[in-house]
Image (cartoon, rainbow over all chains, first blue to last red; front, side, top):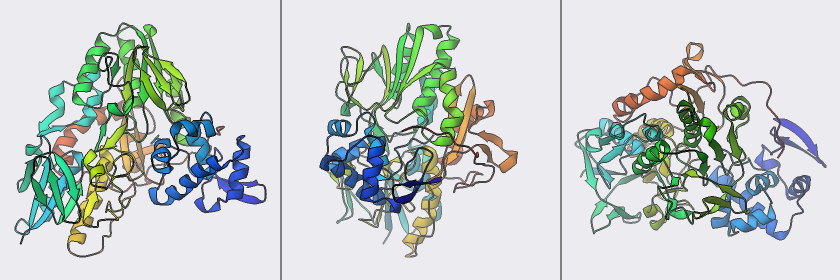
Length: 104
Length: 419
């Protein structure tokens, strides 16, 4: 667990740079996190990010692409277009949530 | 009037809970009914070994009836729908079972129908799975007659039952073909929707080399959209392709369809419950245990076991009108076969990733965590006896229910990875 400074804010992140405190996330921070991985957030990106943020507290883990697609209404194909290569991981990074994980 | 507890499913979780509660709840006050579609209880951890000829199929099945204590009624039937308002479970064909308290324990199942192209002319020919009895028996024949080429082990999506099983299968396959003297003719590829075979930092650091040493290639971040059976190729949503000569896939796992029909499920038919008590927030007299619920830990028999301990105590309090005081912590542990008669052991919960150390008795061990040993392999084999004779009857095992940090340590340095 490390504390880093991103723009004006200090945040807690894990070894891969994912936020570890749900409450430290802000929309301004998301813009900066997205810029770090080369993504300029559009309204379509925001729809996915907002779904992830609202789903996490009750669900207890980061939504899978299938969950974002089924419950959030954004097709998986589109998620790959919005967040190329590694959409699940990139969305979690921008939304300040843990990356999708297995048990080991 | 008798109080009625109905348990749906006589698998690992349902059988354990039925037996534990039958011992606690008075015979003259409580009627316990378990509903299942058949009378065959499958020892699911054994399915991993059938493809390699290590278990005979007869060693992994027993009649469900004999595993349930006296005083538990086993009702055979297919569940159509739950009516939570009327507190009735309706069966297909017209039967109905009324309940005062309902426990859903119908698990999760592989659904090859959910990936286009999976079921088709190549199913059980060059496309296999080992999460069903028939599937693991068919795969044994496919491995025995495999003449070489690319063997792809593939996971459609998370979550899956026994999440380390595909990795174990890969290690066992590598060992199997080496023993047959044909390892040079088999290319092994592990295809996962996650960002690696190991995703927790400490496990990744300690175990990442297991794949390199065995020359197993990993294709990460691969979410399959369809299978082109004619070209024997997996095609991902972002148009990547992985060809195979023999595919061993883990199909999408889903909870039972009646859960969706009853309006109780999420996008994969898992029942939403409180992750510490397994109680449905929408219907307080409904609980879901084992793989059937949506708690954020592994879908595994060990979770079913540890959570059954918490649930049985809590249920007795709840039925007395008291507050439930037990809180499940997501505890899971698992032997991981790594081939050549060795295995690993992992132990973790909602908050603590798998750590190195010893288990269960601190420095005495005797089992070693997160490292390959022969004793861990023997532990895995011995577990089959424990399962039939201690676990299912609902006896307490001499291991803590909640995860303990005794014997574990957290390494100082964690590896850095680029996103």
